[in-house]
Image (cartoon, rainbow, N blue to C red; front, side, top):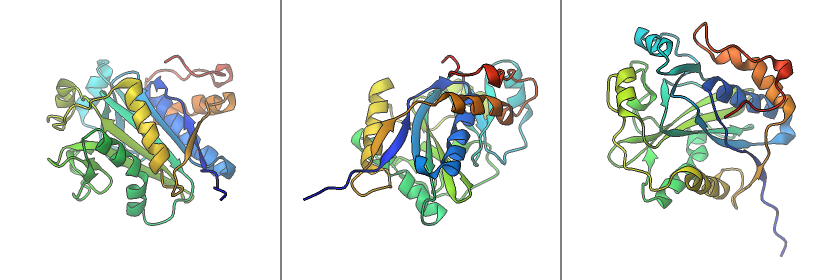
Length: 269
């Protein structure tokens, strides 16, 4: 009996970078998928080189103390291309999934795009379910509510918050996987405690490997799973990413943009 090959999904090796670089990478991957349909789906996991508050694309009104914290060097501010509310990236892992032309409603796509995360945390003995709250613009923090886009534990503590950008029928889905959020900084930003989460029994490369293994089993592109094929970003991609950096900085006076013509390799992590 002949077996069809599993579909290949591009896997970007992890980068630990400032927030503007991370967001520019993700939107560039979506643009590449739109311009070159043969590229197909892409998945990556990454971490942030500094505590960073990412703002949803439509989140335009910022509390003054956020800008004060940024001016004091306590946090960086960056604007996501995806929607949702503010996320503190410190003590977390972020994932980005590019999915060309996913079928079904947006709510159904959230469910299908998160199955690998549910399976991974079940394997860790920390099962998750989807949230049930309605979206709220009254709360500044993404982790203050748990909608059908989010994954929570039985006690209601939110482990993973996700947000989407749809462009020409294709999807970029972002998600923050909380591991050990810093309580003092969370209080300074949101005036509340972070979610009450049990410790994750794996960290670093071991946790990344578990997440990758479950993504290969459960990404919703084929019933029998997918092959994640490592492919680093190429020089033309880094040039486009570098040129786009200013689009993700919500405050004037952020780090200067490196000259695109000089950027033929990733910035130092």
